[in-house]
Image (cartoon, rainbow, N blue to C red; front, side, top):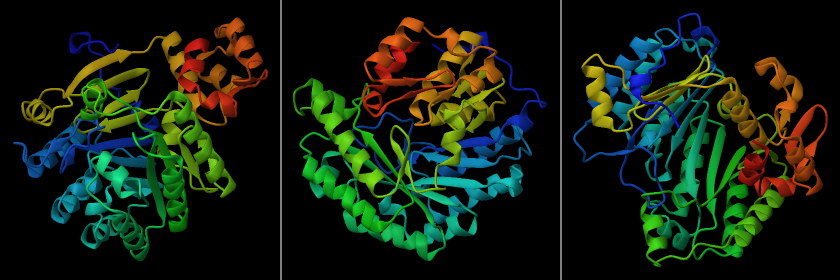
Length: 392
């Protein structure tokens, strides 16, 4: 587990920062919390107005990495597009004033269909956003209500149309499957309606029951019944089949892209490359050290306003921990992990893994193991967490 602040890891040296190519910005605001969500969010009715959040975001960037020249930026949340257009404009002005954005090749923003209206889309397009990820989750009214979503199918369609009209061509659509009561036929319709919109990227996630969420409490109290593991696997195989047949590359367990449309920011993270995170709860990984900011918006602001470090968790990865983490992230990618990449990064390759586990998982048809590469098979992708645990 990450260590406490009393075992602080120093901020990366200035010499380390030019190696950082990826930046994540956490915009915490949401109109409401969805029943399955365990992210660090803030509701607008809480005591921290957006103007204070924006001032503190600029403080953090100025103190930690002024003038950084990233290649990719990912703005997540929360719901970044829940900000009013004027606040959204101020948000991007802060990025423009404090980073060198001339070398950015991908600027992604997460959005929800109900607030991805023309006034906000206009700000995104003018500020150089290249890619928008829409939290559609489903086109089915019953499924959307079970997930606590505020939009309907028509708003998803309008969102895509608004983005294309503004010239933002790279669009991801998120789907969630294995929702209580959801049938395969309903999910198949979600896939078809998604394909009809022609996004260049689709993410499909199995519903997970995180601690301290409304849907987990409902499960524990018997008010909802999760789908079985076998049914979840059936949904997963179905979406993988449908999307690969439609020409999408299955490049990560939950992610599918048309050729050339992979999310560069996420690929960088899965490759265990350094990144900096700003905003409440945002994590950073630079020079073998990881840190995470205070997830509570008011406390994150107070720390920065008092001239204190906003991080509450820090750790330095041991070489063994770093190698294991690189393996776990790499196995999520369809390309898997290369021996040569491990040796360049850590000076050790697959010999660091349990050879008995490698042989057993290969015999079970869960991994493909050659002298140069280890990767999950199609069947192994259905048991990715268990395979990684067995290997590591």
